[in-house]
Image (tube, rainbow, N blue to C red; front, side):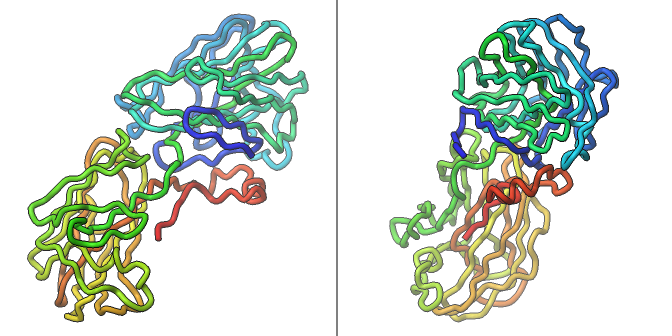
Amino acid sequence: METRMLGTAITLFLLSVPTAMGAVLVDINGAEGPTMSGYTPWGNSEGLVVSDDTAMNESHAFADAALSTDGTVDVTLTSLSDSYERNYTNVTGSLSDHNNLFKDLVLFNDLRCGNNYIQVQLDDLKAGNYRFTGYHVLTQNSGAATVDIYLNGTDTGQDVTQLIDQSADDARASVVDFTVASDNDPVTIRYQAHSSGGNHFGLNAFELDLAPPTDGPLRVDFSRQSVGLLQSGWEGFGHDGTSGHTESFGSWFGTDGTVELTAQAAYWRDYPAVTGTFAADSHLLRDGLLVNNNSDNITLTLDDLTAGIYEMTTYHVNTLANGGRVFDIYVDGVLTETGLTTTNGTSPTTITAPTFLFTANGADPVTLLFDPTGGSGHLHLSGFAVSWIAIPEPTTFLVWSLLAGLGIGMGWRRRTK
């Protein structure tokens, strides 16, 4: 399978997996067509308003605070010339439970309309990286058109052919990844017929969400680089954090291409090297931020995160054998991890490395508080790894057997070290 990155389209012969965070799911209804559960119908209860043999130009707004600058994503459907709405035969076979999604659609008849297109324009999006998925199936045998996919007026080099199949076992999905450079920049996705004679092409539904990550996690080692040692493959935070300090790190999930990190702690230490099981990670684990009593804490603030759900792992080890500090972790004031204990010793067989999720809204910073609650010794933070993830909703899996057969996992979840 060919994969192209941001700014191009990918045509897949399977259905995508809707995600739980920030997704606009729209079922393009015919005038009398049903709406798929979990999707928002296009327009009102009457569905799409298209008079046969006329050009289409219809807009609606879909609520989504995570993706939109004003709380709604405005979507406009247009065509070059004649368009039609249809409520076709029921879907049978393995996708029959998605009949409401696939039996109704908007289409053009290229035999009658010449070099036509269906265009989707998206407005009021926040700056960021997005994925648009369109679904295409006809449950009436009328001949199929192959179309080119254009992004903002440029041919992506990809195309998709409308499937004609009442059983619709392999319903087509077209996937376009794109970047919105600045808030409110409009985006157009056009399904453009090659030439006259291709017959029918239609759009049954679409989904809009944040794009899956194209990079690995952001890994930060609190190394105070002029003194400490930096773990290979990690980014170094070059300050002791005692008076608070902000540094920027390049990352895909930064709204401007970077994530700003502010760290505050009472001390920084370069401890004895870790030996034994974790010797290969000694540069990460031996130095970091710390506090040594229950009245202090370590705080991290992450700014300029793209809206989404994130997974974070933090690393704690104290190579001085002076007792284990018990601590909790708060995210934006919410208790997230509790009763953790710092690992001690120069040759630990385990390390304390909790993994937890948090949500960013794309506008406000996220603050993490590491709060000692008991015990003795040092609470030490060596570093962290954070990843943007997409968590699928199992009830919306359409063709899991196809996904598994192609080796595609249960979403875009990426585990940290």
